[in-house]
Image 1 (cartoon, rainbow, N blue to C red):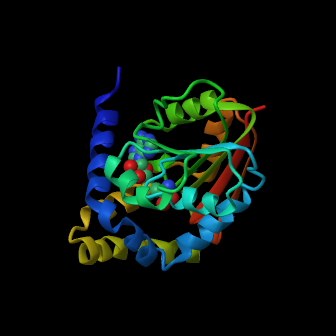
Image 2: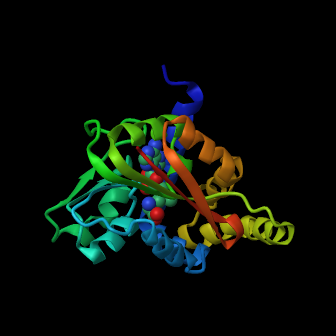
Length: 234
Ligand SMILES: C[S@@+](CC[C@H](N)C(=O)[O-])C[C@H]1O[C@@H](n2cnc3c(N)ncnc32)[C@H](O)[C@@H]1O
């Protein structure tokens, strides 16, 4: 049975993305001062060699990751999955000329794909929004083929004191920017709080190992503001 806490998070997250979907891309550029584009390019380095691969862009949102993957045109198929119909649809037009991209409105905790379907699972700034990250990882493992790769990019924890202080100060400004751009600060208060509440890089590494993933590693970008975890199903 689902706990009241997870039902509540699901509702909060859905409201947040219902509210921001229209200006999501613009806000990303403003908030990260454009650096999210560099982080996503870095993520692509972990997704090399996807020729003839079936890739799942989980928590696809407006489709930034699928768009970057499309630039290579090497993949066999991309599934874009997200529970928020408005976010998915906001990006849909960019993929209209592709036959091999399928959009599915679903949760990371309950993926409507058969066991061992995909070669690569990628989730960018999505795992923190799931209401049950452990269940999402279990599902990721289930639908990945043996020999397949898991790649996750997420906001994590900054350790260096000076950078931490700067980052904390900047985090307080983000909701104010949200108020100016989308007319409401609450979705961006959620963002900063959800980063604070989320696991550390090492805790998340352990969670992947607990879900049977092997060779789990991570790299920190900008001192750990963002980290990329990679893992394998062997
Ligand atoms: C910050 S956006 C990330 C979008 C895109 N991947 C990117 O990097 O720009 C987070 C996305 O996670 C989705 N999301 C929220 N809860 C989820 C869940 N339980 N399972 C999968 N995705 C979820 C939201 O609807 C939203 O589109």
